[in-house]
Length: 196
Image 1 (tube, rainbow, N blue to C red):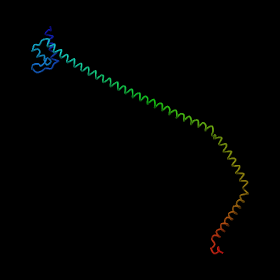
Image 2 (image 1 turned 90 degrees about the horizontal axis):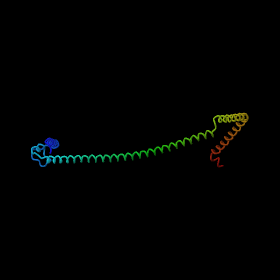
Image 3 (image 1 turned 45 degrees about the vertical axis):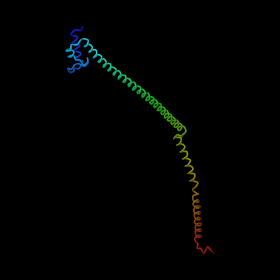
Image 4 (image 1 turned 90 degrees about the vertical axis):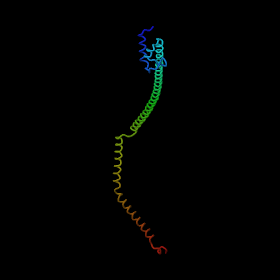
C-alpha cells in the first residue's frame, strides 16, 4: 500500500501536470484535478490510472516529437547528400573544363613556340644567305670605281665629238624647220593657185 506521502507526491505531480478546471464534476479521469481528487477521496488505483493515462499521452507526444525530429534529420541528410552530390558533379564538370582549358592553352603555347622557332630558323637562314654589310660595301666601292673609270674615259673620248654632235643636231633642226615650213606654205596657198 502506498503511504500518504506517496499519494501527496502523486497529487502534486497531477497538480503541476494537469490544468486546473472549473468546479464542475470531471467528465473523465483526465480532467480530474488534484483538488477534486483529494475531495473525492480517490483510490490509489484511480490515481494510478490518471497517472498512467497522462504518462501515455506524454510518451505519445515525445514519440511524435522524436519521429518529427527523425524525419527532419532524415530530410536534412537527404538534402545534404543531394547538395553534396550536386557539388561533386559541379566540381567534376569544373575540373574537366579546367583540364580542357589547360590542354588547349598548352597546345596554343606549343604552336606559338613552334612559330617562334620557325621564325628564328628563317632569320638564321637569312643571315646565312644574305650578304654582310662589309661585303656589300666592298662591292659598291668596286662598282663605283668602275663607273668613275668609265666616266673618265668617256669624258676624254667625247671631247672632240661634242662639237660634231652639236653640228649634226643643228643641221637636223634646220632641215626640220625647212620641211615644216614647206608643208605649211603648201597647205596655206589660196585655192586658185592650187587649181592651175
